[in-house]
Image 1 (cartoon, rainbow, N blue to C red):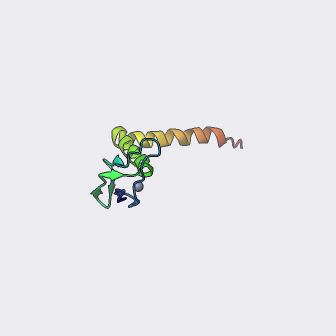
Image 2 (cartoon, rainbow, N blue to C red):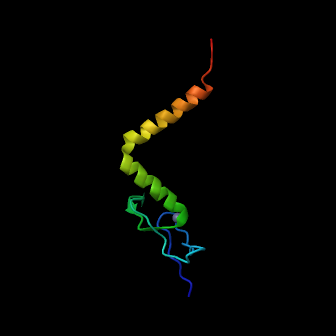
Image 3 (cartoon, protein in one colour):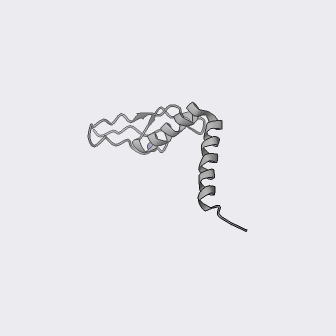
Amino acid sequence: MKAYLTCDYCNQDIQPDPITGWAGGNNGWPLEKSGAACETVCNVCNDLVIMERLRRATGEDMMDAIKDSVQGVDGARYGRDDD
Ligand SMILES: [Zn+2]
């Protein structure tokens, strides 16, 4: 019997970890799909979970500030149009 858990986000089988053999997936909180909480997610989608946790922890304002600062760096690097 080889019944894998299914990722609540991408619906793929959750493969056992190659090192630990753990096949229980990752806690998907607070990721949601179509308004439904994802309780268990695969390793790939766990990256999205971490980003969502970060976004919630820092808030939208902080993410906007990060984006602005990144754009500011790009502007400083490429914005050398001397008229
Ligand atoms: Zn997944």
